[in-house]
Image 1 (cartoon, rainbow, N blue to C red):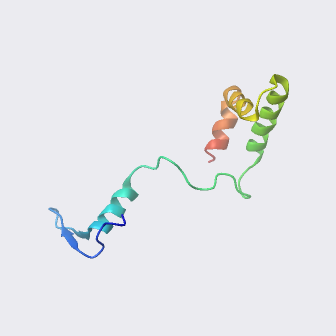
Image 2: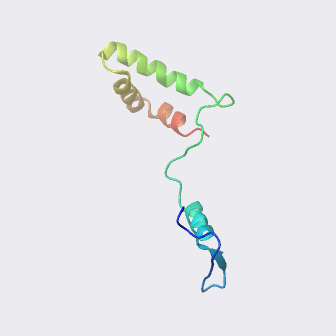
Image 3: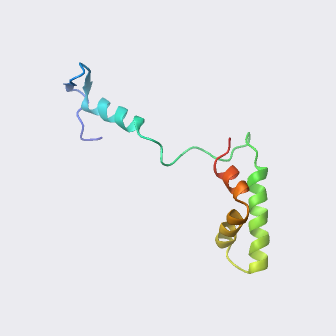
Length: 90
């Protein structure tokens, strides 16, 4: 984007005029979002789901004597409903 000219207009076959930079920004904005960079947990959202998932992972970690990351993966597998609700809140 840094190399695109923001001043020279390009005329498209449909009669639209736009600079290369404007066209590229619009093109990027229309692509589907693959990663959400928004905050997932906030004060106004229900944090109980995340707390329940962490509690389950902690319980599994103690029983299995594994790392927390491994326990969290197991917890997500055992309770996909909690994991999915935490991952994609409504």
